[in-house]
Image (cartoon, rainbow, N blue to C red; front, side, top):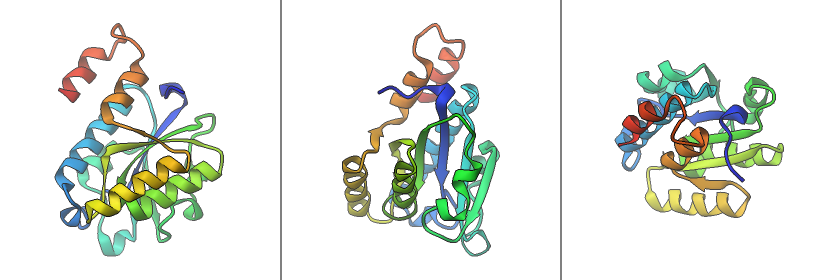
Length: 176
């Protein structure tokens, strides 16, 4: 099953300024999330973000925040009980997800979205946890639970479909 831009929403979980220094390879995760959100914007894919207790953990990294169409403040680890599903655009059943921490908030949100009937793609190179082992185990669990593991480049090229897409050169420049 291919991701389709016209059916997708990009969801970036808790890419928060105060959290990212503790994340293994946090700068790379932030960079990947920024590139993903930029590509989503070029492809007219809505971008939603979440922030876990922003009054305590701060807001998402500014560049991520600026690329999000909406940001949901939450106190549950799983964003769904805090109203995420109500904020998802209608008619878009493909959820492409990245963010932190892979084994907590990102995983619990992805599992709830699967349970709610959404098709979920986890962008493995745009996820992070403090401990890489936790991240790896979470990715295994997500895969076993029906999420599809992908990379940023897989998302970009599946959304474009072909090299004659009007955004091909712009997107290619972002991922090189």
